[in-house]
Image (cartoon, rainbow, N blue to C red; front, side, top):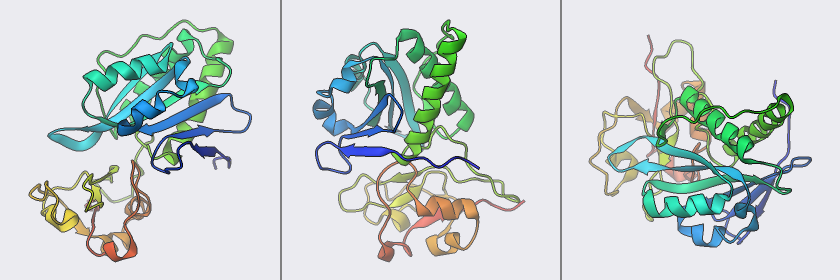
Length: 263
C-alpha cells in the first residue's frame, strides 16, 4: 500500500485552471503548471529560470486517440519552452519542475528526462514527440539516488495536477480493452469527458454540436451503465485523468464511456 502524502498548491493568479505552483514538505522541488495561453504570464516566474525538466501535453490535429507529450530539460527551462512556443503547435498545457535551491545540474535533468521518456513509453498512455531517446548521463551513486528520489516526487505530483500519462492503465480480469485517458472538448459551450479509445457510435452523442460531431466512436455504452460495470471505467468516470473538470450531474446520462469487451 502506498504511503499517504500531502502537497501544497499555490494558485498564483487566482484562477484554478491558470498558473499553479506545487511543492511538498521536505522537498526542494517546485512544480509549475500552466496552460499554453498563459505562458507569457508563467514565464516571468523565477522558478522557470532555473535548471529543470518539463513536459508539454496536447493533441495533434488528426491524431487524437492519445495525447502527445514532449519531454525536455534545460539549464533555464524558460528558454527551452520559449522556443517550443514558437515551433511546436500541438501542446496545450505545460508542467515544469525545478528546485528552490538550484539543486539540479545538467546531468540530473538529463537523467530525469531519460527516465520520464522511458516511463511514458512503458505506460503506453501517450504518444511522444521526442526524437531519439537521450543517452544516460554519468552520475555517481549518490547523485543517481538523489535523482531517483526527485523523479519519485514528480510522479506522485503529476496525477494530482491532471496528468496520468506516466502511470499504467488498470486492467480488469476478463476484459480485452482498457480505458485510456479521457479528452475534454475544448469548445466553450460543450465540455464533456470523452473517452479517446472509443470508435463506433457518433461523437454527437457525447459532444452535442461540437465541430467534431461526425467523428466515429467504438464500443461505447451510456455513462450510467459504465458506472455499474468495470471498476477501471468507474475510476475513469470519477475523474478526468488529463485535464478539465467533471461533468455536472445532469450531464451523466448523455456522456459515454468506453468499456472493455469480455473474452
